Amino acid sequence: MPPIIFLDIDGVLVPFGDNVPMYPVFLPRCVDSLKSIFAAVPTARVVFSSTWRLPAHVNRLHEQWAEHGFPESLAMDGTPDLRGEPDVSRLHRRGLEILAWLNTHPDVKQWVVIDDERSAIEATLDCERCVFTEPGRGLTADDVEAAIQILERHPVRMDS
Image (cartoon, rainbow, N blue to C red; front, side, top):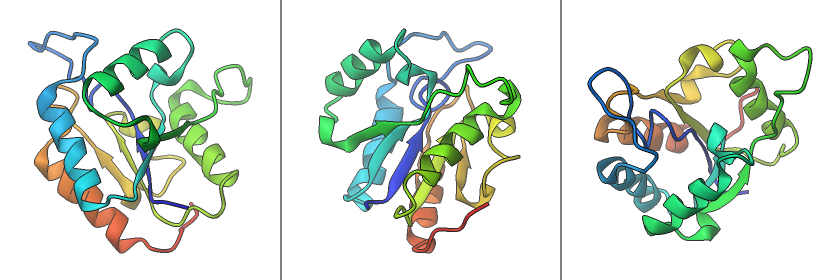
C-alpha cells in the first residue's frame, strides 16, 4: 500500500479566518506546497478526510483537484462518514473517521494527517503522525517538511 496523506481542505488548501476571505477555491501557494510533498514522496496517495468529500461538496472537490493539475490517480479514497453514528462525538469525529479507514486498511504502513482541527484528531490518533496547519495560513513550506519527515520516519504502522 502506498504512503497515505489524510487531507483536510478548509484550513489546509483553502485558508480562512479573521481578515482572510474564504473562497471555495484552493489557494495556489497551498497547492504548490502539497505538490512539494508529492515530489518528495511520489508514491503517496490522498485519502480525503475533509467535509469536501461528502455528497454536498464532492463535485467542488473534484473540480478544484482537476483545475490545479492533480491527477485523479493521486486521490485514492475518502474516510467513512460517521456523522450518523450516535456514539461518535462531533468533537472527535474526524480522528475516528481516519482511524476507521486505517482499521479497514491494515496494510497501510506510512501515513500522515494534514488538518487544521487538532481537537478533532488528537484524542484518537498518534499525533506524531499529524501536521496541524494554521487555518488562516493554510499549508506552508514548514508543514510540508514536517509531513515529509513523518512519512519518511514511520515506515511501520503505529496504532494509537
